[in-house]
Image (cartoon, rainbow, N blue to C red; front, top):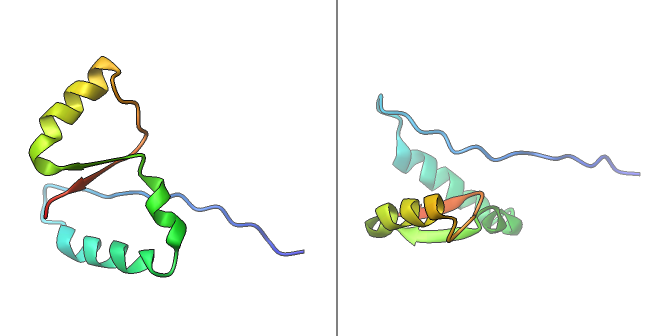
Length: 72
C-alpha cells in the first residue's frame, strides 16, 4: 500500500524585498504538474477590489479560507 502524503501550501510575504514575481512564476509552473492546486483558493479577486474584499470578509459576506489576488 502506498504512503499518503499531505502538504500545506504557504504563501510567504515580506516587506524586505522578497521576489514575489519569482515566487509567482514558480507557483504557477506547479499548476501544470498538480492540477488540484487551483482548488486551494476559494475566492479570486483583482487587486483593485482588495479593499472591498476585506470589507466583505469583515462583514461575513464572504468566508473563504484563502483568496487569490491577481495583479495582472
